[in-house]
Structures are given as structure tokens and as C-alpha cells.
Length: 263
Image (tube, rainbow, N blue to C red; front, top):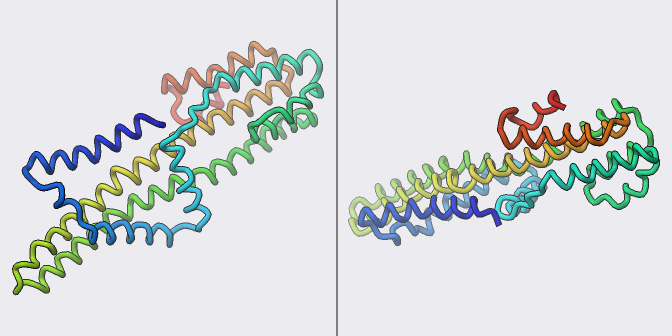
């Protein structure tokens, strides 16, 4: 479980509830089922209209990436590529054919298969980059779903506030109903802002970060396979792949795409 995500959610919601309590307000005043129905229902409805169903289902599945990240370390990947490089240097590229079926990573397995087939290095790079771009376009859809939901939620909250005020205006003659209408109006706004800024937008940002990590490792695979195809020294390949990790940890090179020049 991602401790940072859990701590952030607890701190965010806890700050709102704690602030309400410190001001002498009742926590029960923040519990308004009507406001929740308006904000959550409206937000989900607008999001469903905006995206195909397969994107929405994938976004729901990718919540696990936010709460339960795999944290795949690049070191085992570098070690595996080093092993492929050493074997190919000693016995030729065809010796990697048994490794293709043993490799669990789909992207790496496809690349190894192309290497064994003796494809031109430039063609190898072009083919794998097309595969990478296709994966990136598919994977970033989940982040876009949450980002859009984060944009809808505050507006739906305002709609809930307006509906509450309409209810208040309709019952000006009955003072007993004014409090409930005003409560729904203000709590709906709070629900909209909290849904956007404590859940949807942070989830979108974290999914984008997870995707950057995945893209970086796939770029390392492309670089390593090209080096193997060119018959380069395994130790030189190791140094080159380690530079990806070093630049990422020091935040000197920005997005993963900028690291290709270093390689």
C-alpha cells in the first residue's frame, strides 16, 4: 500500500473535519446525503458522458496503482539486460531465443524476439517506439478520466449550492425549512471542492507519475536491446542504463523522454 497516498487522504479530510470541529461546528453538519447525491452523481454522470466505457472501466481498475503501487525497481531489469548482452556477445543473438519464452515482461519479450530475428537496429527502435507510444496513449487515459472528474466536481458543487438556495427561496415563509436548504447549498460546494482537490486531481497526478516510471523502464529496454543488437560491451551497456536511473533520482533531466540524448 502506498503510505504517502493514505497519509495525504487522511490529512486532507482530517484537516477539513478538524477545522470544522475547532470552529465549534458539528461534524454532522457536513453530512448531507442530498448534497452528496448531487455532487457525486453529477460528477460521475458528466465523466461517463465524456469517455468511452472501456476508459472508465480501466480508470476504476487503475485505482489500485494509486493505492497499491508495484514499485518495480530498475536494478533487476538492468541485470537481466546485462545477462542477455553477455550471452549474445559470447554465443550470438540466436542464443537469446530460449530467453524469449522465459521473459514475463510483454514489452521486453517482444523486443527480444525482434533481436533474435535479426531485425535492423533502426527498425528495432522504430518498432519498439511505436509500441511504447501506443502503450502510453492507452495508459494515460485513466489519468485523464480522473482529471476530468476533478474539473467537473466543483461546478456540480455550485449547481448543488444553487439548488439549495432555490429551495431556501421557495420556503422563505417557513423558517423551519431555511436551515436545511442553506446547509445543502454550502455543503454541496464543499463536497465538490473536496472531491476534486482531495481525490480526483491527486489520483490523476499520481497515475501520471506511475506512467512516467513505466515509460522510463520501457525506454531503458529499447536502449539496452539496441545496444545488444549492435554488439556493444555489456559493461558499457550497464553504465548507459544506470545513467537513466541516476538522472531520474537527481531530477536533472525532467521527463523520461529527455534521457535519450544521454544514452
